[in-house]
Length: 108
Image 1 (cartoon, rainbow, N blue to C red):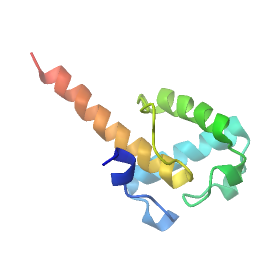
Image 2 (cartoon, rainbow, N blue to C red):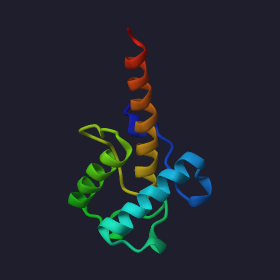
Image 3 (cartoon, rainbow, N blue to C red):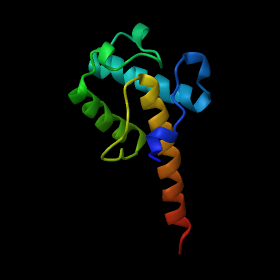
Image 4 (tube, rainbow, N blue to C red):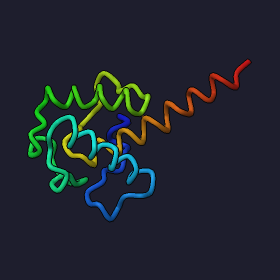
């Protein structure tokens, strides 16, 4: 089963936990400042294409998020159609890759 399929997709703002909320706020600022999306329309349920983020811009967003969160998206990141999908993917990758980095540090 693909990692993206295992993730719980966020569909509304009231389902964000504190980690997801921090990730969402950071993503919201990136989309607003660097991709000129109005903050008022950026919600977890908002479709990226409805925000003017086409498939090429999604790749640009992913590169920016890799830099911001010190993560690496897989070559096939799965279905990333909403802002909530990106938030879930980021938090999953931060947890997964952070754990892998910690394991490498602890190994003599």
